[in-house]
Structure formats: structure tokens, C-alpha cells
Image (cartoon, rainbow, N blue to C red; front, top):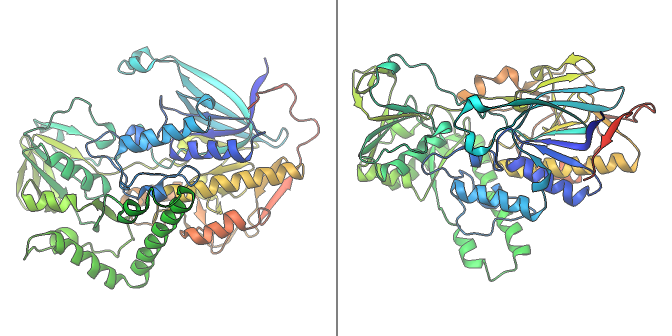
Length: 509
């Protein structure tokens, strides 16, 4: 029986994967493609996370797609709205029929002899309403081939969030939950809640849960920078309906891009100035005389780790009202009644939420092989932040750390289409990034000091000292490189061997 073949195989049906498929439909209409999604729904992060208050921490004019703009004035949008936006876009661009759910890619093997990837996936034959009974799963191994592999699975592990080991956790009489696996039936109304963590998830959970909980305490080992932003864009509110969308929404996108860039560059070039501004922002939201240092004055510089943004200062409102509080220090252990700090202070709680971060899982954890040789991602160097040295016909999406993920995802998708069309016009079937000097000095691909990055830094590709092997973290520069720059720099193009592609069942788009 012939093996099914598609021109482009996209892994992941989240924000990046749906965007990639839409770009292919528009710009490479003659290419067949399929999207493999391990879960049972479109949306990725925005379908997986269901904790209270889940929302974007980027504005939707930049987190939304350039080809399908976000048109609402609420720019720090809630999770369900973003999920519906991604699904609506998939429907509008005819992507839905190409998605195959319950397909987890476990291994991919490149063969230069046939110029194809052989992709092995595990398909779970299980109806969505049977998801509560793992024993009913039936796993079938599925194999197909593709000419170009495009991984849009993000870089964290979907099935398991990060939770450090806490002494005494089994002694706790209450309930412990992780935001990545939020129980749909969790009732915390009128209960005392402790949220362990200080990142984006924690600062979202605290004000949301404080609306109905008896009290919410954010327990942080060390502070993060927290900045209030308007939940609605005041300029958009004035101009939507008055200026045609084809002019307005790109302008709003660029306005926010440049604002983000200014804040990031100020943080890097004048960190003391940015620290002062952030501190002043906290004090403006709190009661006179509030001491911001213990809870909102990190020891690191702004943007050494991701900034936490709160819509309309909702976290500060919850703290000011007394419905929430912050405790900064080290947890000694869980007790029957809650948490005990190393200071001896005991925090009583009925529910403890471990908002302690993510586990990184590059390229979805799939085993990557080229001509029989396993590829160690940590030994590769990223080309234009989206391809890997020595790995043919492969692209991946890794978004910005200092701006919206989709800004980079859009650029990568557009570049992949440019590259595929360049190859088709010249009858090339293979493209491989080639690093001229394998001994070149490299640095980590992601330049954050966050725990989730440092825990897995060796498993990530590296980056070199200069473009195209250097990740800019700068949208305008990437626009020039990925939209306007050459597609033939530091790569080798090849043609498929004449004997290749026998016995393949090519599926139409």
C-alpha cells in the first residue's frame, strides 16, 4: 500500500499552525498540506489553558494575524475570545478540513535518497466525550511522508506543567492544582487560596480568583516586574468605524510594535530609568505610603525575564481592596492547613495553585533524524531563527520573547512561502542551511534568565554571532530580513534524485 504524501506537513493547530496553514492557502495554493494536532481542538495554548481570568499578556493588534486583524477595542483579550478568533480564522481561510486531530508526532526521519520526511505519529482513536477514561484509548501508529516539515508546536510541554517538589505536600488537607490542568469543577468561592508564583499566570489568577474567594495570597520566592496597561485601546476606540480597516488595523499594529520596541530598548539601554518608571507605576496604583520594594522590585534588570502586564491594574486593585495580598519569601513546606514559610509564618489555605511555570519541549518532543543520524537540537544553530543548520526542508516557529508571538510567526510563515515558491520556480526540491564555520561562537537561542528557559537551555538550538544565524528580537529588522531579504544566503539548494518518489500516493490540496 502506498504511503500518503503531502507537500507540506504542519505540526500543531494552535495560533502558529493555523497562521502557517492560512499563509500556505493564500500564497502557495498549488501545494498540498496537512496539519497534525495532538489534541482534539484548534487553539493550542488558548484551548488548553482554562484557568480563571486566562487572557493575553500582549495586545491583540500584534498577537492577532496580519492577514486577519483583530477588530475589537479590547486588546488584552480573554482566552475564550482568542480561541474563537483562531477558530474563526481557520474557518474563513478553509483550513479546517486539512486538520487531523489526535495525531501526536513522535518521530521524523529525513532521507536524502528520496528527498522526503517520513513522519510517524500516534493517533488516538477516542471520541472527545470519552476523554475522561484513558483506558478506552486506542493508539494507532500512522506513517506519512512530506517534502517540507513545518513545526508549529511551540516550545513547551502540553501534557505536563512544571511543579517543583515541595516537602509535606501529601500532608496538605486541601486541594493542589496546576493552572495547566485546571479542574472544570473546582469551586473556590468563599475559600482561602494561595497562588505560588510571580509570573504572568500568577498575576492573572490572583485578581480573577479574588472576585469570589475569601482571600487570595500570591506567594512568590522573588518579585517580577508588573506593569499596568489599558485593557482597551483608546485610540482604537476613537477610530474604529471612522477609518477603513485596511488602513487602520495595520497602523494600530505598527503603533503597538513601536511602543513595545521603545520600552524594550529603554529597558536594555537605561535599566535604571525603566526601573524607576515601573516602580512609579506600582505606587500610582497603591495606597499612599505603600512599600513596593519587598514585592515589586526584582533584583534583575527589566526584560532579563518577561514582563508581567495587568489590564487596568486589576492586580493592584485586588491588593488595594484587601481581597488579595502578596507574601515574598521561601516556602519551607506544606502543612495540613497550608504553607509554612522559612520565616515560620504559616499561610492557611483551602486551595493551593502551583503557578510555577512550564516544561520546555522543543519541536514537540519528536525524535529528529537526518539520513540515519539522530539530530541533537542543542548541537544545531538556528538559521534566521526558524531553520536548523544541516537539517533539510525543515522550519519551526519560535516567537519573540519581548513582543507578541504572532509577529514572528507571521514573518516565518511568509518566509516559508517565499522559500517554497523560490524553489518551485527553479526546480529545487531541497534546501539546507549550511553553517560555514561549525566552530563559530554560539549563545543560547532564547536570551531570558527565566527558570523555565534555564532548566532546558541545553536542549534548545543555539544562535551565532551575526545574521542570518543571529536572532534579532527586533520586528522591523526581521521584516527586512524575512520579507525583503534574500532566501538563498547561507543555504544549499539541491534537486531530488531522479529515482526518488516511487510508490507514493500524493494527496491533493
